[in-house]
Length: 520
Image 1 (spheres, rainbow, N blue to C red):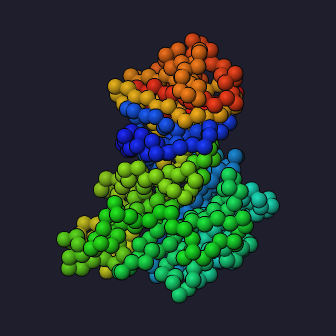
Image 2: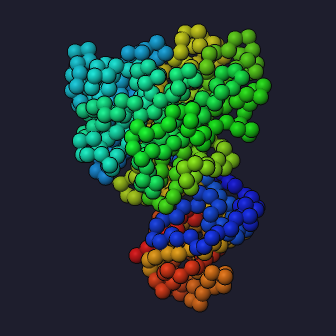
Image 3: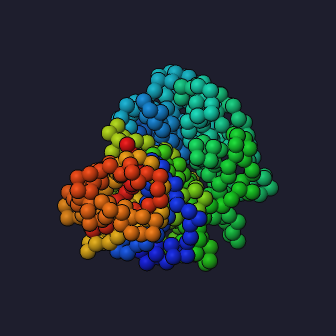
């Protein structure tokens, strides 16, 4: 399933855009997440490529401290050697009243596929010290319920604090705290109050998986947090953003910039949002220039407008899936056609009620793919609230029959969330002037069986440079490669054009171009 934004819209937007000078791209990878490289375009579209589901239950309830289910506020990262996962679990099914029954557990993997529960040994859980609990039930001095966290690697931290966990534990007024660890098991509270909300306006602000990470381009910490946009009735879950040169320098939630929220195209009921957005799972893409991705959880609220709930609606209940957005700066987000990025499974499958992306984007071992993970479940939001909700949902055919909640792996091509797709009969696009370094042009490209791609290098005015005209390019066909070298009559060296303003022209027929890069 792919999603598109039309070439006519691309051209219209770009016609109104002017550049002060050439775009300096050096030898850095460039993705097609917006219109910046489409100065002229016809017969092409930006296609969004949802990941494929592995169908695996990477982490499922297997231990007594997990028997109530696996939670959505979990995270995964890769440190160059080991895959790490910190996942939330409950030991009772009635989550809404289990304020002391939650834990954050730690697992590791060598390949991101098969996970081993670490033997943390921090606490005795029902006579068993052989457990992987690192928070909750007294582990590291913490008691928690439904609250999970997210973990990021902080390059500014000393080695004994390289892992940072941002979490909202305890009373809401205390906001987001940051714990730090060198091994992923032993944690200390190093930043007691990093983000807060004004208590007189709190309205469940920060009640989600709040994201913080170090942005190496901005050289600042960036936060994406839960903000509740005021509405006449209830609230509209939205995502706010802020920057800080230190952990702890963020403004209160109400003073942050709202960067993602329900708008006029999202489903409404009586003029109010019927769909809003939980966690952002926002990441800065580590393998290319100026690219940010968000996988916001979309929540559809069941209410009396639905015939089956006309007499009695469940409280704060409904299904959740994950959408997709991309950004060049982390502030302005492209939502494309808004179709589900991680859709619900078919009824009876383990993810038919919930598909909530957790934080983290990691590479596979080959360098050809990347993984994200999601909390899959047959629980609707609100299922765990109380017995009344369970009875209403079950009576209408929306009840959980197997009580499955787990974490499952999603697989994407490297650079593969978006591409420029050429029409079946052919399309083309030309970049604005760019400045590059390096001696070869590489493409992440997929022609499958019948597609072809040719590339030309033009001067700043748009005339083909001798020896590098599109028609002189060796036809790229039968190619599905991450780093395909472009050549012209067998010659691939473009070093004599480095440092000179040039335009790149792509002829694309029935093929996808995901990224380009000049390099050695």
